[in-house]
Image (cartoon, rainbow, N blue to C red; front, side, top):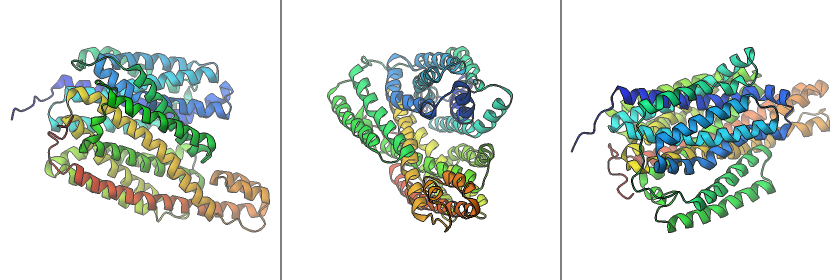
Length: 506
């Protein structure tokens, strides 16, 4: 068997450029959470406009990932990456100097579309640059690690920027990174275009958008407002167009999305891990951050600092996983990581109102470190074994699975936490009816109502904190078996030590 060439300095330097771009994208998202109150006050954005400022970015990314991943395979991955970088930089400037909420929403939409070009193109280019499986797995882990560095640094960088500059600085942060990519990309990154690729089927593009956008909108609506008629209608519309999309792909000789990828065990397992892992991580992060602020009484910045350890552990786990996979079977490393994550979730089942901070933070670190190992390794294995012409499509599938996982996690586990909170909230006697009714909305609303409820207010706040802790425990009880099931899936789907030939069906 011919040995595959090893990557040299140029390839590793190119990886650094791609990794910095990924760090910027994750940083850009997390910084906005802190900037939102500032920009809303200056632009006069109402509640609905604030939601669109936040959500339109993820809508556009999720909607265009599949299209952009396939488009990169057709027109050239480096070309699409550079076009996306130029568009991202221009949209960042537009967002920073927006003069109205509508202008900022439009700029955020452009950021989402251009962001959808960057992620799959980056993953696919890594596949093009690194041919050796060991190097590829390490490169993918490094790339994912930089994404988590951005998540960890977001609250800190955002706090520093907003302390010294205006809210637009949160968007201008990305411009130097994009300029560097435009300068260094043509020098360090190779071009790749799939031979014999056909024209992009515009009908398939439209159907994919009409599938994904309503589904993401419906999930976000459920997470925000509960199960309502509009959310159900959006989900139904997305599902209906999804059926039409699948039927069209099966008829086309050169489809937008090669559905044969789903029939391959390794790819299907990776997508399930991205989806279910995203659900658990999004859900547990949501209830954990709420616990830190509503139960522990921390400020948003203090809560963000307590979330940093989980990101650090996740980065370390991603870096260590490739080395462990050289000594032990990859499936064993993945399964062990997920088992450790399940232990962290079991720790969350024991978090109480008093003395729960340490247990929560350690549990989050174990959960994050546990899921990091299979995430980095599975993507490295799959990207290393697929045909080069399928790299963009596979990267887009992986990213889309993660996007849906986050949306579903916030919706499903957020709704579960709320239901348990409401069923466990025991309103103390003497609390005014209006305050009691408000307390059932959320633990944050209970804190406001309790502050205005006189002598019985403190008892109401304590009862709400207890009820919310019960919701957090329940989310953990539901999530732990999911991680254990994923551990079994890893043992079955990745039982071969090497990933060669796992995509012979494609």
